Length: 205
Image 1 (cartoon, rainbow, N blue to C red):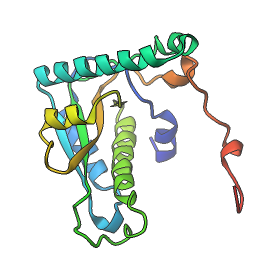
Image 2 (spheres, rainbow, N blue to C red):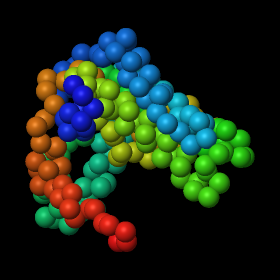
Image 3 (cartoon, helix red, strand yellow):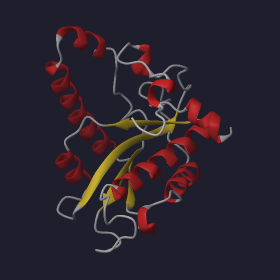
Protein backbone atom coordinates (compact mmCIF):
# COMPACT_ATOMS: atom_id res chain seq x y z
CA UNK A 1 0.00 0.00 0.00
CA UNK A 2 1.54 3.33 -0.99
CA UNK A 3 1.16 6.43 1.14
CA UNK A 4 -1.64 7.91 -0.98
CA UNK A 5 -3.72 4.76 -0.57
CA UNK A 6 -2.96 4.63 3.16
CA UNK A 7 -4.22 8.21 3.51
CA UNK A 8 -7.43 7.33 1.66
CA UNK A 9 -7.97 4.09 3.65
CA UNK A 10 -7.17 5.47 7.12
CA UNK A 11 -10.13 5.20 9.47
CA UNK A 12 -10.87 5.99 13.11
CA UNK A 13 -11.72 2.45 14.23
CA UNK A 14 -14.30 1.86 16.94
CA UNK A 15 -16.14 -1.45 16.57
CA UNK A 16 -14.03 -3.47 14.16
CA UNK A 17 -11.30 -4.78 16.50
CA UNK A 18 -11.02 -8.59 16.49
CA UNK A 19 -10.03 -8.90 20.14
CA UNK A 20 -6.57 -10.21 19.26
CA UNK A 21 -3.47 -8.36 20.43
CA UNK A 22 -1.33 -6.60 17.88
CA UNK A 23 1.95 -8.51 17.47
CA UNK A 24 4.83 -6.96 19.43
CA UNK A 25 7.03 -6.70 16.34
CA UNK A 26 4.26 -4.94 14.43
CA UNK A 27 3.61 -2.58 17.34
CA UNK A 28 7.30 -1.72 17.46
CA UNK A 29 7.25 -0.91 13.73
CA UNK A 30 4.29 1.39 14.26
CA UNK A 31 5.99 3.13 17.17
CA UNK A 32 9.13 3.40 15.07
CA UNK A 33 7.16 5.13 12.33
CA UNK A 34 5.76 7.55 14.89
CA UNK A 35 9.21 8.20 16.29
CA UNK A 36 10.53 9.12 12.83
CA UNK A 37 8.12 12.05 12.55
CA UNK A 38 9.54 15.53 12.01
CA UNK A 39 9.57 17.76 15.08
CA UNK A 40 10.29 21.40 15.81
CA UNK A 41 13.96 21.85 16.61
CA UNK A 42 14.30 18.04 16.41
CA UNK A 43 13.03 17.97 20.00
CA UNK A 44 11.02 14.77 19.53
CA UNK A 45 8.71 15.92 22.34
CA UNK A 46 6.64 12.74 22.38
CA UNK A 47 6.67 9.56 24.44
CA UNK A 48 4.50 6.47 24.10
CA UNK A 49 2.94 4.69 27.08
CA UNK A 50 1.75 1.24 26.01
CA UNK A 51 -1.15 0.03 28.15
CA UNK A 52 -2.24 -3.62 28.13
CA UNK A 53 -3.25 -4.42 31.70
CA UNK A 54 -6.90 -5.42 31.59
CA UNK A 55 -7.76 -3.57 34.80
CA UNK A 56 -6.31 -0.32 33.45
CA UNK A 57 -8.12 -0.71 30.12
CA UNK A 58 -11.37 -1.35 31.96
CA UNK A 59 -10.91 1.62 34.28
CA UNK A 60 -10.25 3.95 31.35
CA UNK A 61 -13.18 2.51 29.37
CA UNK A 62 -15.53 3.19 32.27
CA UNK A 63 -14.24 6.76 32.57
CA UNK A 64 -14.67 7.35 28.83
CA UNK A 65 -18.21 5.96 28.89
CA UNK A 66 -19.08 8.46 31.63
CA UNK A 67 -17.59 11.36 29.64
CA UNK A 68 -19.46 10.22 26.53
CA UNK A 69 -22.73 10.15 28.45
CA UNK A 70 -22.12 13.70 29.71
CA UNK A 71 -21.55 14.90 26.14
CA UNK A 72 -24.67 13.11 24.91
CA UNK A 73 -26.73 14.75 27.64
CA UNK A 74 -25.50 18.20 26.52
CA UNK A 75 -26.77 17.77 22.94
CA UNK A 76 -30.08 19.03 21.58
CA UNK A 77 -32.47 16.14 20.86
CA UNK A 78 -31.85 15.93 17.09
CA UNK A 79 -28.07 15.87 17.52
CA UNK A 80 -28.35 13.39 20.40
CA UNK A 81 -30.28 11.03 18.11
CA UNK A 82 -27.57 11.32 15.44
CA UNK A 83 -24.82 10.81 18.02
CA UNK A 84 -26.38 7.78 19.72
CA UNK A 85 -25.22 5.07 17.25
CA UNK A 86 -21.68 6.51 17.05
CA UNK A 87 -19.84 4.30 19.49
CA UNK A 88 -16.44 4.72 21.12
CA UNK A 89 -15.87 1.05 21.84
CA UNK A 90 -12.43 -0.40 21.32
CA UNK A 91 -10.50 0.44 24.47
CA UNK A 92 -10.88 -3.07 25.84
CA UNK A 93 -11.44 -5.03 22.62
CA UNK A 94 -8.29 -3.64 20.96
CA UNK A 95 -6.28 -4.92 23.92
CA UNK A 96 -3.62 -2.24 23.47
CA UNK A 97 -3.74 1.44 24.29
CA UNK A 98 -0.95 3.76 23.21
CA UNK A 99 -0.98 7.02 25.13
CA UNK A 100 0.98 9.65 23.21
CA UNK A 101 2.36 12.41 25.43
CA UNK A 102 3.85 15.85 24.92
CA UNK A 103 6.78 17.30 26.90
CA UNK A 104 6.83 21.06 26.38
CA UNK A 105 10.14 21.33 28.27
CA UNK A 106 12.05 18.96 26.00
CA UNK A 107 14.72 20.87 24.14
CA UNK A 108 15.10 23.55 26.83
CA UNK A 109 14.28 27.23 26.61
CA UNK A 110 15.60 27.86 23.10
CA UNK A 111 13.87 25.48 20.72
CA UNK A 112 14.73 26.25 17.13
CA UNK A 113 11.49 27.07 15.29
CA UNK A 114 9.28 27.47 18.36
CA UNK A 115 10.14 30.98 19.48
CA UNK A 116 7.18 32.68 17.81
CA UNK A 117 4.77 29.76 17.37
CA UNK A 118 4.61 27.82 20.63
CA UNK A 119 2.14 25.29 19.27
CA UNK A 120 4.74 23.81 16.92
CA UNK A 121 5.74 21.44 19.72
CA UNK A 122 2.22 20.12 20.11
CA UNK A 123 1.84 19.93 16.33
CA UNK A 124 4.98 17.79 16.21
CA UNK A 125 3.20 15.24 18.40
CA UNK A 126 0.25 15.28 15.99
CA UNK A 127 2.65 14.41 13.17
CA UNK A 128 3.93 11.44 15.17
CA UNK A 129 0.35 10.26 15.68
CA UNK A 130 -0.40 10.53 11.97
CA UNK A 131 2.78 8.60 11.12
CA UNK A 132 1.69 5.79 13.43
CA UNK A 133 -1.81 5.81 11.97
CA UNK A 134 -0.69 5.62 8.35
CA UNK A 135 1.84 2.88 9.12
CA UNK A 136 -0.90 0.93 10.91
CA UNK A 137 -3.25 1.33 7.95
CA UNK A 138 -0.58 0.01 5.59
CA UNK A 139 -0.22 -3.07 7.82
CA UNK A 140 -3.97 -3.67 8.13
CA UNK A 141 -3.99 -2.64 11.80
CA UNK A 142 -6.79 -0.49 13.19
CA UNK A 143 -6.34 2.69 15.22
CA UNK A 144 -8.99 4.57 17.15
CA UNK A 145 -8.33 7.96 18.74
CA UNK A 146 -10.22 8.30 22.04
CA UNK A 147 -10.90 11.90 23.04
CA UNK A 148 -13.72 11.56 25.61
CA UNK A 149 -11.65 11.86 28.78
CA UNK A 150 -10.56 14.24 31.47
CA UNK A 151 -6.87 15.04 31.01
CA UNK A 152 -6.14 14.96 34.75
CA UNK A 153 -7.69 11.48 34.99
CA UNK A 154 -5.55 10.12 32.15
CA UNK A 155 -2.42 11.80 33.54
CA UNK A 156 -2.93 10.01 36.84
CA UNK A 157 -3.82 6.73 35.14
CA UNK A 158 -0.53 6.52 33.21
CA UNK A 159 1.65 8.18 35.84
CA UNK A 160 2.54 11.52 34.26
CA UNK A 161 0.61 13.74 36.68
CA UNK A 162 2.87 16.34 38.28
CA UNK A 163 5.59 15.93 35.64
CA UNK A 164 4.58 18.70 33.24
CA UNK A 165 4.05 16.05 30.56
CA UNK A 166 0.62 16.11 28.87
CA UNK A 167 -1.28 13.13 27.48
CA UNK A 168 -2.35 14.17 23.98
CA UNK A 169 -4.08 11.03 22.75
CA UNK A 170 -5.16 7.55 23.75
CA UNK A 171 -4.91 5.39 20.64
CA UNK A 172 -6.60 1.98 20.54
CA UNK A 173 -4.38 -0.25 18.39
CA UNK A 174 -5.18 -3.76 17.21
CA UNK A 175 -6.07 -6.15 14.40
CA UNK A 176 -9.43 -5.50 12.76
CA UNK A 177 -11.99 -7.49 10.80
CA UNK A 178 -11.92 -4.74 8.16
CA UNK A 179 -11.47 -1.01 7.79
CA UNK A 180 -14.84 0.64 7.06
CA UNK A 181 -15.31 2.00 3.57
CA UNK A 182 -17.02 5.12 4.91
CA UNK A 183 -15.91 6.92 8.11
CA UNK A 184 -18.40 6.48 10.95
CA UNK A 185 -19.08 10.20 11.36
CA UNK A 186 -20.10 10.41 7.72
CA UNK A 187 -21.94 7.08 7.70
CA UNK A 188 -24.11 8.03 10.68
CA UNK A 189 -24.75 11.56 9.45
CA UNK A 190 -22.79 13.53 12.04
CA UNK A 191 -20.87 15.55 9.44
CA UNK A 192 -19.80 15.10 5.82
CA UNK A 193 -16.38 15.82 4.36
CA UNK A 194 -16.06 19.26 2.77
CA UNK A 195 -15.21 19.39 -0.91
CA UNK A 196 -11.55 20.22 -1.54
CA UNK A 197 -12.49 23.32 -3.55
CA UNK A 198 -14.24 24.74 -0.48
CA UNK A 199 -11.02 24.46 1.52
CA UNK A 200 -8.51 25.84 -0.99
CA UNK A 201 -7.87 29.59 -1.16
CA UNK A 202 -5.41 31.38 -3.44
CA UNK A 203 -3.23 34.23 -2.18
CA UNK A 204 -5.73 35.32 0.53
CA UNK A 205 -8.72 33.85 2.40
